[in-house]
Amino acid sequence: MAGNSFGTIFKLTTFGESHGEALGGVIDGCPAGLELRLDEIQHELNRRKPGQSAIVTQRKEPDEFRILSGVFEGKTTGVPIGFVIENTNQKSHDYSHIKDSYRPSHADYVYDQKYGLRDYRGGGRSSARETASRVVAGAVAKQLLKDIRIDAYVSSVGDIFLEKPYQELDFLETENNPVRCPDPEVAARMEDYIKEIRKEGDTVGGTVTCVIRNVPVGWGEPVFDKLHADLGKAMLSINAVKGFEYGSGFCGAKMKGSEHNDLYNPDGTTKTNLSGGIQGGISNGMDIYFRVAFKPVATIMQRQDTIDRDGNIVEMQGKGRHDPCVVPRAVPIVEAMAALVLADHYLLSKNSKI
Image 1 (cartoon, rainbow, N blue to C red):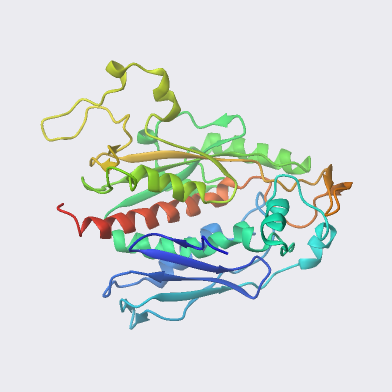
Image 2: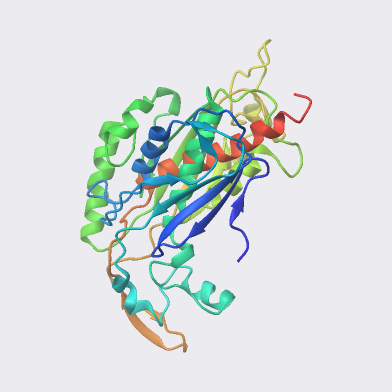
């Protein structure tokens, strides 16, 4: 199986399955001498882990990580950083009903067709549980980036939208509610709606907005390795993501050039920032902001028709512990993937003129 690594210089390779012994990863390219705060890495994992509130999956995993290599006396040594996260709360029998049939809108069918076999227990390698390894690596990347701020938050659930621009939000409020929306009133409506959806045995999607501040001018390359292109690939690699837009995004397609152009100030900053902090694939020093769309979780607790391995139509109903809405737990994953991209471009920029 290919495609288990991400990055060019700051590179992450992950391993493990949802119901295997453990998940883990290897971070290559992290410079030596970085003082690594392990408590901050665990904090990021705690933000992603299951069972943290009534509106997420109730799988109880401590998600405690263990460093195997690459750190000595609290500092990185420059060699690959290996780590593991043990699985402790698998309930594989919850998936016995899908051993010979395929869940609608999951990776089951295509995985089986591609590889000729699949681990039906929670989706195996295609499970979103793999993202725990990304969060560990992203937490390391955040510490390498030092003064760069990466703040993601839930900006919509279903048709409930946070309408305020990010400049008017207090990001310190994001972690004060289980939805991770920095507006308490909107967060309360989102939470109530998710609870309603769960009672119906259904699921709902939403969006996560991410704001990155203090990125200097000059990160990114002008052709295939554009900064926004790498951010797009990173976000679209997250389970359940169906869309990515940065800056003005699709709204910009409705505007005239005279409306959309970001006019310069004498110091090189711009009066507006519809470019989303990136021009020609290269950071321009303004805030980078983007939005990521997540589909409804495919496993629902309602009866649906599907097919088995022989092509017969069979009836299926979801079982086990699943998120009614994935977006609250996706917030730290979005931040982690953004940090991985930025850490890579930071190191790449050191080899360029800037």
